[in-house]
Image 1 (tube, protein in one colour):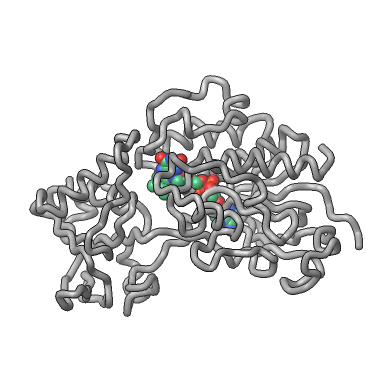
Image 2 (cartoon, rainbow, N blue to C red):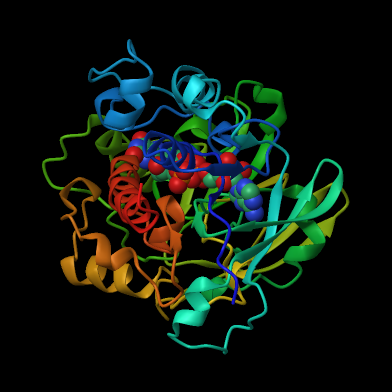
Length: 392
Ligand SMILES: Cc1cc2nc3c(=O)[nH]c(=O)nc-3n(C[C@H](O)[C@H](O)[C@H](O)COP(=O)(O)OP(=O)(O)OC[C@H]3O[C@@H](n4cnc5c(N)ncnc54)[C@H](O)[C@@H]3O)c2cc1C
């Protein structure tokens, strides 16, 4: 068996992928970042108009600050676009990352050279075979190798479906063109004129409801599965932006805005086209209801793409789809408030596949309490392991 090539492949140039690249650069490791989008922070750009609920002081790692002196470090909360402009773009252009970020490179699959998923279980031979990466780049498909892979591809590219139980509603695929699956931009009120069906109850749905409710020619039908949602309220919340979302959701439920109807305890059963509009069948214990809407905003959560590592021995939790050890630690800690998460330790980031790590938002699977500062801590822990293994 030949020795694996040196080098770390980092998948995704979001905040965590770029932080991982800095950690490698600081340790003198060879690394390449493969980013599917045409710019760094391609997922953040999709919610760039939204103001974050964590302040600048929590949104950059010490590593990032060392490379970008003058970065804000106060209690102002940036928008996603501000995070990109002040942090992600300057980092990608910094001397430390020069020539290391490949834009427009979507990693399709990762495997071990010469080995299938079920072969060489837990053996040293597995660890010494290099990773093979199949990549769609600007010049077509290409293969690359690496000794270590850090999967920082996030979740925002893989939205969940709208139907009961998380599978597609009947006919959902036929109305895909009517569905917005990211936080809507509402600067142009005419774009959202008419009736909007909003599905979901998390922070993204709460944000969308608040924005859409401000538009004078928009009526909102908001479908929420839970009959009595608590909207994820954190008692005595120290993040005012988060509490404000809960307060407005409650106001809508109580009928405080005549253009908003909240259908609690309700699921989407079927969708089908009616000319330029969409007919919707809803179900609740009170029976079925029918609506016709002009737009659909589906914000039912996201989960990372596990197809990327189908041929690897990554042990995922059957419930959360996060890597097993991390999932068990997070479920065991049971912190409802993302700010109250305990440190879980580097061993939770290991999986049976040697030298392959899922980091960042993707590492939380279906759990929705990921914070950037957790991702940066993961990078510090795994970065130290990788550097030690490489003898750096
Ligand atoms: C609306 C919204 C608001 C949020 N607000 C906060 C907040 O206030 N504070 C906080 O701490 N967290 C917040 N988060 C959560 C989290 O911090 C962000 O989702 C953050 O962007 C996660 O960073 P990441 O680097 O892990 O992943 P991402 O930012 O999702 O980056 C992943 C990158 O990988 C790329 N990619 C995807 N697939 C591939 C592939 N196959 N090959 C190559 N590249 C690929 C994507 O294009 C993307 O650039 C928020 C999330 C959302 C959605």
